[in-house]
Each structure stands twice: as structure tokens, then as C-alpha cells.
Image (cartoon, rainbow, N blue to C red; front, side):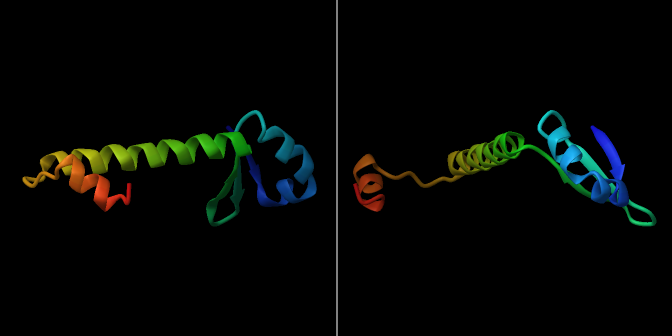
Length: 81
């Protein structure tokens, strides 16, 4: 990961956005530390999909722990299918 100060990012914004297509660019600020991370749209999309997948896995595990069961017909009705 590339790490740059906010002032460096401002002065060479297009260069760092281009660099973010290859690897994340961390933007830091004096006194505050890490302010932001710039990533490519593809990286962002993959990260969001991974988070959604994890939420689905968690929800499925929670549903398996529940005592109640639902029939296939009831599920189809509930889903409007």
C-alpha cells in the first residue's frame, strides 16, 4: 500500500488515482493519522461483494440455529413465487 500525506495527494491527485488502480493509496494527515484510502472500483466492488457474502453466510448460520422450520410451499408463498 502506498502512503501519502494529504498535501501530497492534493498536489499529484491524478498520479495517485492512477496508482490506486494497482494498489490502495492511504492518505494521511498530520496530527490525525490515517484519513482515507483510495482504491480502484474493481477492488471496492470485490470488497463489497465479500462483505455481502459474509453477511449471507452469517444469516444462513443463524437460520440453521433457529428451532423453527418452514416448508417449501410456505417459503415459496413468502417469497411471492
